[in-house]
Length: 167
Length: 336
Image (cartoon, rainbow over the protein chains, first blue to last red):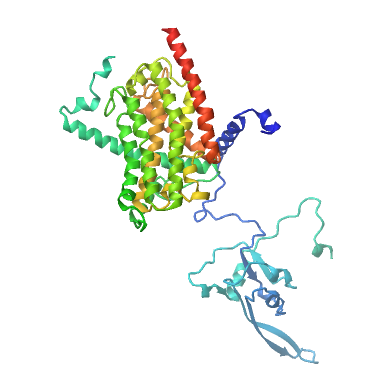
């Protein structure tokens, strides 16, 4: 028996334990009744990866950095003559952008690496399917998920200003 | 004592022998099938809220009140598996042997001054004898399962029963000494002036601890310690037979709470000044209060090791009980 236990007296710890459980019982439980009540997830939740197509420049960085190769990108090059004349300008047009969520391990490297903020984390998580092959989600679905992206939480008091704001 | 000679209320209602007998048996069986369900539901809910959860919320639409009925329906549908090496007869008999003694004990529990199925002269003696038969079912289950974990669980349960039966019986004996009667009604009526929980408070605590140990409920649930021996003697059981063991556990909680309420909390006697509520209300209230305490202990305390369990019974509970009994007998003789 340690000194601390001796000071507490025999059985006092047991009574304290009983008091803790009894007090917990009288408090409201923190459970959210999920299918009936939607959970209020934090803004940074990693539910699903959303794509803002007009920001995508088809640089392929996300597809190349993806550790399990679950991002599919197809694109073609279109060139058009500038109105004022001169050399034809070329632009890459996105034909297909799909993420296979049956392979994705939600590491977020693609979101991290995207140079033009085309990929976002969304807290949306209800996209289960009955067939694993249906877990490949095309760009239309990925675009829809951008509407569920929450604004980032406010910075804490005294925090450094973010780099984007400083530059 | 005049009331002992009186017949119970059901006897008056239907004169004759067989009709009241069958009716009484029926009432007892219905009680035995419904009250443990209520206690089980209470355990679900209380345990959940003590862990900041909600417990069952879906079955039966209102706070999951039908959860245990749904569980029962599930158990009936499950496949009844008997291990190939098992002793089939003993294996199948064991759940019944574990269940029936508690049902029989319920027969002699009075729910009112004239509301009982049977008033045995040997009341508490019969209760204690019957309630220790249950472990025989556990021992049968463990032996017949042909599984080493089952056997170890069963032997632990048996060792535990032997250890805790002694303080249990001694605590009850003190009540008998004070009441001067072994009949359940005699003991309860002896508490008209003072519930025995007050003069015998340490023995009340000892009796509750020993009851919890005899029911192999946490923190004395070493015989079903899932982290080392899976589920003890019940490991090989499935379906209805497993449900029988579960029912015997919850039936046991009800019965041991009822016995403790009768011995120490005045059974169907009301609190002073609250006699407008009838006896059965008080009896059920006390049963549920004590069942709540048993659930509360489960929510709070971790499981004791096997050696701690045995040590606690033999060198703490038994001496405490013996000393207190000595004190009671001295006081009793001195007062006389």
